Length: 324
Image (spheres, rainbow, N blue to C red):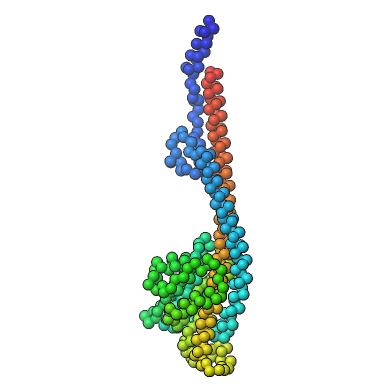
């Protein structure tokens, strides 16, 4: 009798439906499009969300570290950049700065960085250089490029490859001093013929702002021509020339010294702007990574809660089926 009762109980158990008549709603996530998810299959697992959260956390650590490195470099370069401004400012008072001068041979010296992840400072310098090239080009005029920095080289080589005369990269690999920059300036002057050198760089104003700047250095011949036409050459005419040197020789020496001083200041200002822009870019990236991490955490919690709810509903449905 006991065995027969046990067999009847087993028969009722196998005869009862093990699946709840209520359909279980599949768990979907915003990370996978709804049309790619088969019906009745969970679209994402908590392991996928955890892996993505881990990768976002690692990226956030990297961006925060890069921001700290840029801040430390900025403090070192900023003082040097501010001191370098005293080198070229006396030349502006002595020889003047005439960016609108009309000459035949223009050399555009574009100063940029070798590394990216620093906002739009390199694109801004390239845009200004291209605009100056259009303004100074003509049927009887010639414009050449001298590029300092890898990023400007990559952009200008696309449409101005034939106009590029000199390319110099990895300038910021080691801290530069005036002696090294003056050697670079001498190499540029020996390899190009110019009536006007137009140095384009980003002048540092603050951590979050920089100003695209162009400084013009004229050749001694153009300086004398402008002096004769205007009757005054900055404040140079107010000084008396002593010794055996002529005015042309003095202007030649002043032009070379002026270019080396302006180039040194341009390199320092652009390096300072680069680190400030990198600080801002890395700070924005860290905030964006934090926002993404918050959204992923919410998705993970919802997915885990839906999974638990589904498992509970399955357990309850199975228990109800056994009791019935």
